[in-house]
Structures are given as C-alpha cells and as structure tokens.
Length: 155
Image (cartoon, rainbow, N blue to C red; front, side, top):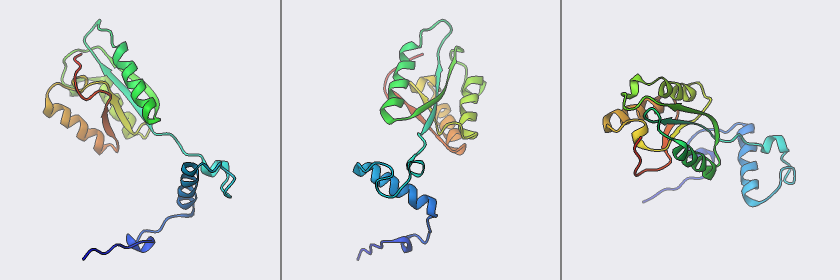
C-alpha cells in the first residue's frame, strides 16, 4: 500500500514566512499574476537569477569565440546570469595545473556563481577520471559543472 501525505507534516520541516511569500510569488508569476495584484509586494516577488561562471580553455593562439558564444546562448536559454568569463590558453595541462579553472571553482565556493559552465568536456579534461574529479570538487564547493555541448569539441 502506498501512503501519500500532504502538508507540512510530510517532511516535518516548517517554512519561514519569507519562504512562503517567495513560493506564493513564484506561483503567482507562473499563473500570470503581476506582483502586487495578489497581495505580494514587488520586492517580495523579486527573485535572484541563477548565476554561473564561464570557463574556456584552449591551446595558445586558438579562437574560442565559437565556444564562448555557445556558452552564452546556453546560459541565456536557462535564464542564467553570467558573472564572469575565464579564458585560459594553456593547452593540455592537467586540471590541477590551471589557475583559471581554480578561479572558476573558487567562484562557486565563494557563492559568486552556482555553476561552472564550459563548452565541452575536453575544456576541463579529455581524461574521464580528471573530468570527474573536477566535477566532484565543484559539487563539494556547492555547485555543479555544466556543459554547453555534450558531444564534440576539442580545444
């Protein structure tokens, strides 16, 4: 038998008044109700956009304009704000040897961004174990690693 519970008793957590106002304002916005029309002030209805930092890496003298545009379009498609763009021209150095990648992770750790967005897996590392290690580090910092294009791309 499946039991479905509803209401705050379900998880035992209680929402603060601010959280409840925010949830109501998000529901109103989704329903097309303008801030203030449903008794919620415009300030209470305002939500902060999700922020990401773009990380691009390529060999010296390579043009990474295309990958940068892909990342910008990807962020725009999700409604994300780009807080910064970090471009590195170090080629195939391992991830732990890249200052720019370290800076991108620090942006997540400091709360400046919630994700590191890059164009291709190979911009982090072509070696799956190294890529996974960087992704875990970003997750431990409180964010995630996002790819603008899942397949393809070499830098």
